[in-house]
Image (cartoon, rainbow, N blue to C red; front, side, top):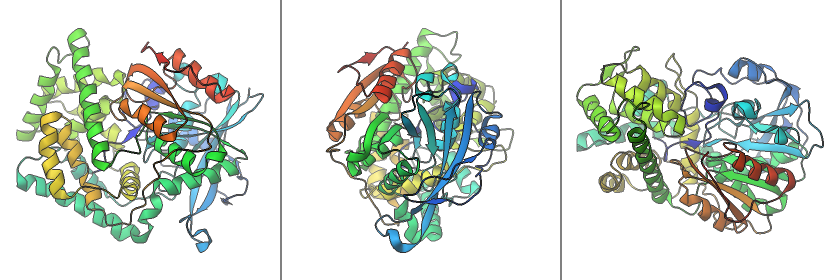
Length: 517
């Protein structure tokens, strides 16, 4: 399993009103990544842009009106500590320009999080404009929007070391195995996956770290021709941005870090923070069910309904149309998927209600969107990359015995999410690759950085916001009193504050709190 739960921007939801509630980056069943072809430029050289209208066409069926799409790639050293080795990864980018652009400031580079999320896909979704949940015209009129897939992700020398059967077994496994034999079975699967990645990639594994990716980001800044970086990072993208600010403070123009990861937390603290965040978000969901029973078919006791569904699935799981059993693992990930956005609450309530009538289609739809599992049973490389990056970053993973103890302790503190989040640390406990932890200090010399937090965020809890701003030394906190994961560009208050910073470098007033609606 991945370290913690994948944390990222949800874009496709608002854009296409599909009812999806994935935590990541593309609608389920999206086309395979497509490259425009042509040679990659070397690090430090200008990008060689080529038109690539096929990318939005394959992702969403069309290009956004009034936008142009160009793609390029940059060859970066596999190991920035040994740049003359000759071994490289290719980092793929897309540049989206509004035909109405004027008074251009530069490029806005963005990362949607994960780790493992495609910035190329996210840039395409955000190009469809404010009316569909995309970027405001105030931003697209002044910036090129540049999405990139970090090393190991999507189109950029992707890591792929978990086969489809093991992915199915992983997501379907018991999220909280109480019996020792059941625990050992889940642990053995995690070891098999970690060993498989080590066998395939071996000495490359530390090269997928966040610090290496942050150095790539500076090469991308140079490739697009910007003297200083303007960056929008969501979720894990806040960690990437914070790492960049520490390594290259003199190259920062403006960084928006939305959905903060706290780099100063150790591995166990970060996982427990997510357990607390999801438990809080689930409690908010249950209160919504009580208050709006007409929209929530499992009201008034939503917690009881979910707990009952998990217990019944352990004893006698409902079979899905494709032959899969709707085990507690699939139900758990369906639940997780729906908590990333408030719009997902009605979907999971309906899916749990359907399970009571032996219909698992809704819960599988939610879980598959989270897992990026396609109808043919294949997976994207989201969770391969998620594991590779997180484990490369982590040098303090607990032992298997410590995880077994934490499983029991966190179950008592966070009844639905504590034990699964403890189990989620097993993958990195078995990881044999060399580690390359990111730095955790101030961005001395960088201009002020805007850190955005959402009070109901399950994946990157709100408490992280002030901690990240404090660590950087020049952070300004902007609060959204809403539900779900990440804030920009959800409301006019948030949009105005972030746009003013990106365009004019004007920070929002100290302590600004934007209402949910």
